[in-house]
Length: 119
Image 1: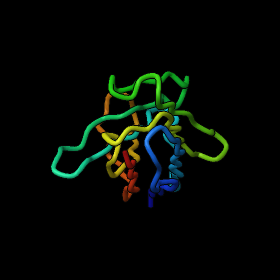
Image 2: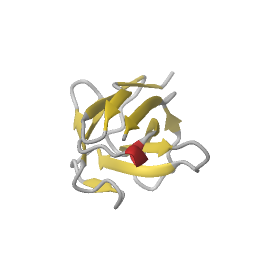
Image 3: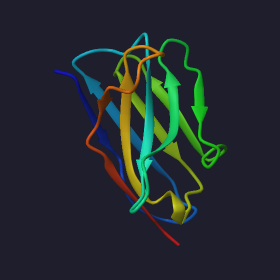
């Protein structure tokens, strides 16, 4: 059974930092990618960042470029999202997701972790 478990969410003041972790179990995604999405109250879920597992190439939403950084630890089958210079508009539930190949849709999702940024 594949499971993605996020951790690291919490409450932080604007300008602060948080690091989210997502540990995958049950399989690896060596041919695919893992990413982060977020959903703010009353809004649709949106893409934040992703990393290609095989070569580490990263992609970011424009809204987080220069402030967030996604990385992976192959040995731990874990992906991280370092979030710096946080803004109130970053407040959302953050979800980890994974796909088995680069052309597939994200078929695996975590339960989400709340990030709240006070202004």
